[in-house]
Amino acid sequence: MLSVLALTSVVLLGIASQITAIVVYTSWERHALVGSDVRLSCSFFSWQWTSPDVTFSWHYRPDGAKEGIAIFHYVGGAAYVDNKGPFRDRLEFVGNPSRRDGSILIKNLDFSDNGTFTCDAKNPPDIAGRPSSVRLLVFEKVPVQAGVITGAIIGVVLGLLILIVAIYYLMRFLVARRVFSLSMSKHGKKGKGKEGSQQKQAGPLK
Amino acid sequence: MLAILLATIVLHLTDLIILFISTCANAWRTHGVVNYDLWHDCTQTNGRYHCRGTGDADWLQAVQALMVLATIFCLISFIIFLCQLFTLLKGGRFFFTAVFQVLASLFVMSGAIIYTVMSPEWKNESDGYGYAFVLAWLAFPLTLISGFIYIVLRKKE
Image (tube, rainbow over all chains, first blue to last red; front, side, top):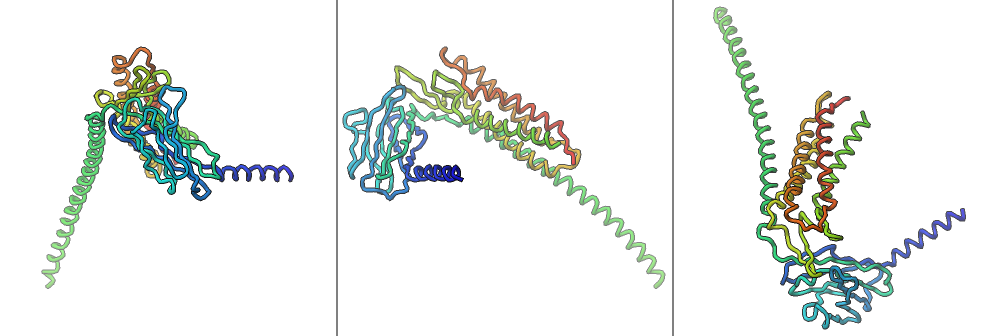
């Protein structure tokens, strides 16, 4: 009895601590072209109301590097962007903190921007939670022929499949109709023969 | 009888899962910790990453198409198997299912062969084959065996 009570209380405590944990959401991976802009979205879920002291902070770690740098911080209603690091003059805050949106816009991408961006959001008193990361991949160019050959092969094979199935059902339908019309004409001849013999018999009677 | 049916279904679902992972995971080649290939290709030069799509390699697009087709055909054959399970006459064979499953195995075989033949000219010495490549080669005999089982299997009551 006591052990059941202890177990229940532990479970409830676990659930309660989960209820007061903040959950941060970002994309898993983003792909972008060199020279283009990319919007990294960050949002959070929290059981508390959105506090006026809500904070968002973005952290960037280049691919292959051990440590990262902080590039963005939003606190007390003001957004502070990186003005010394690799993103100076390229970073813009496009989120809406009152709607729990802490997204940033990075302009004019370069290959050196490949890396992992981590968003950490805090909504006092709800501060215990894990930050979420999004991986950025910068592409040289969208290949003009990307996927054309792939799509063509897939389309042709599936089209052939549908064609073969359609022809098969068409043949079955035609053969069935032919058999049906043959049996109808046979039945029709037999019926006419019977009627003719009846009339001949009825004639002499009259 | 039920055991054979369950084993066949489990084998087919395993094939489907392996094909899905092999097609969707971008890990046909590895370079140290980084996986790439089949859908995009990131190479490292001077500590910086350089990503490009796989548009210039025509054979890679053919491999993509064949893997997608193999997955689609395996899925279609599973659906047809479920249909035939209920509509087939007693003593009948799962012929349609077998046809699609064998076609799926042929497609994955072609894809894996094309990739194996064309990639040595393309990869560096320090590259290795990734897990998705191994899964693709594994999927070929499994789907073939599954297709043959469907040819041999008869519906009993």
